Length: 161
Image (cartoon, rainbow, N blue to C red; front, side, top):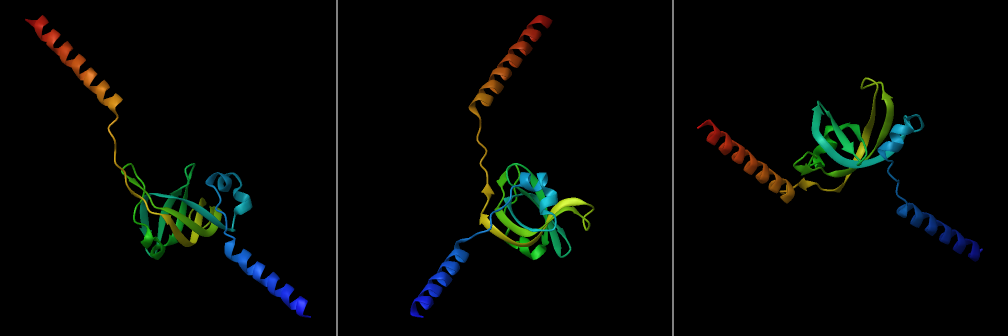
């Protein structure tokens, strides 16, 4: 009897340990697009960089998430977007977030578009501003072309005299 109790405690302890260490894996955009019929109507985890703008639509908002391959539109309650500080563009790197929500291959609510209706989001890492570096090769090329242009202009001026 005592041995049975100890074995059950060990079993329950292992189950609790495993439940706490198992995380749902996110699905890539390529997987979602190529196998849309498989995931249609199911809860998925998708992560990526927030790009573009947060487009508010009343109590809800649209965001676009890019995982490095493709971007997928995410429909979410506007209050969930409050944690998003940076959206990606040519001057900034957007926040990287994990979205858990229902995937729609052809959403009837949004004109048949492929989208995810978010139930929760979690910020994985913050974005920030990007510093644009001057490419020395491009600078030298531009200066060289400017020199050629000035030389051609001087030669044309001398020819006209």
